Image (cartoon, rainbow, N blue to C red; front, side, top):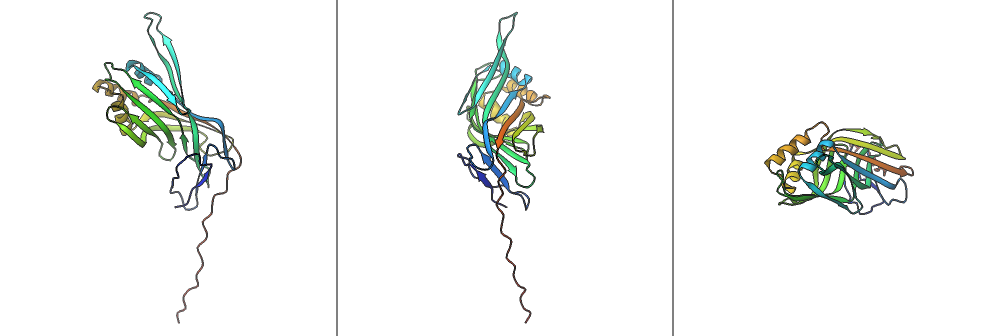
Length: 253
């Protein structure tokens, strides 16, 4: 297992990853001043699917806020016949914290994001009420999983590095080209653990869980996560492990 070369720490915890014998994962964090540097704004953008937005409306998930650099983009529509206002689009924007790529083939391994966003459900036929906060998102391109720190109501509490979503496919720059990196993963689907966290935190009833499961398995899932990353500078040279010392064969005499 090789050591990871870290560019610009910015509070990112050290991690060790096992790769091939000749590869070294290289982490570049926001705030680096040498080698590759992340240029602002670089961010991730979660856009909820049309089916998921419909679920948010039916479940009265109205209290959506963001903090620590993240933001929420909301658009409403009004039914001209009834005058009822509902969500038309829901999206969450999270700033980039770090990218990790393979030193040998420049393959993108993961992206980390800072900031948090919170959802609050008010009691309805589908939920008894609750809230869920997601932060420290990490897209792992090796396992097709999105991890997060979750803080949930109704006994969920705080869970770190929870495997929240999986995804079906990814499009974009999976080989680190330098300059701009753009990727989109879709469709986001809650994992088995993610389903339980989401449903329990927001107080879903049995009917609510059935609707959530159906939305999760719909063609578009819960939505997409797109990343737009701008970088400058040349890739650093990974550290090399010293070659093993040569030893003379013992004399048979």
